[in-house]
Length: 276
Ligand code: PEP
Figure 1 (cartoon, rainbow, N blue to C red):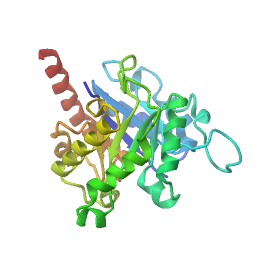
Figure 2: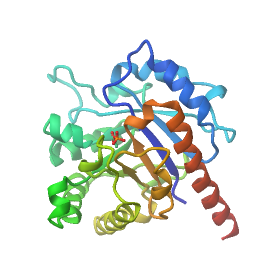
Figure 3: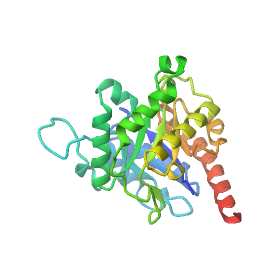
Figure 4: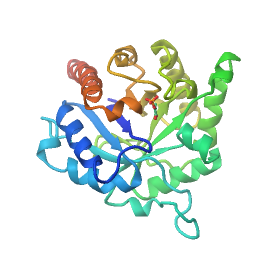
């Protein structure tokens, strides 16, 4: 059974002085069974957020903790890369990492080759990647969205040494999660339609299968102007497994609404699994 995941991407917001308090508030208001909750703050806030969400007050009734993720990792193991952060530096601070976010592809010129190397570094350090893919508006308008996303997946994952099985039964968490984030929907207030995101999720799973990765086992999240008001549209789609949330993830009320809706999907999936 694929897990239902809500990941918060705080981007370049919060400081070490205030991130812990926000994380604690969100954790306390999202204590919902069955949902994998991940907070990805800026690097300098990983420690304060980890400290804030450690302990029973942040865990859901089923005992699941809030997990901490980084927003990026460097593609080299170590060396002369001023200002960068390696996978091994994240040990003890994060267990997840966002890789290939469109803002990094845009601002830092990240290439598929670098993104492929980042994935390898993440897995070697025991980090669980959320790989972001998505088309710009011109590609969608030209009918090229599927091709662009397929190219990004092949560029990042062809021949990748992904741990198997891709669903880590021991931790009941995946070693690969994909976030489909149409670039035109990120931070714009203009979300994709649930049906379009679901169609892309199906296309993504076909590409994964073709690459020898069991697509049915890989959670696919939607990202792009998700709020508590529109999350239902995405979680109503059986092929979508949650959301990567940017702007709304800085608001505890929004996160409470989004995770509550995710909990409904998680409960329905659990009931379905039990009754067969
Ligand atoms: C994101 O940062 O991945 C994102 C989807 O942002 P927003 O929700 O603000 O569109």
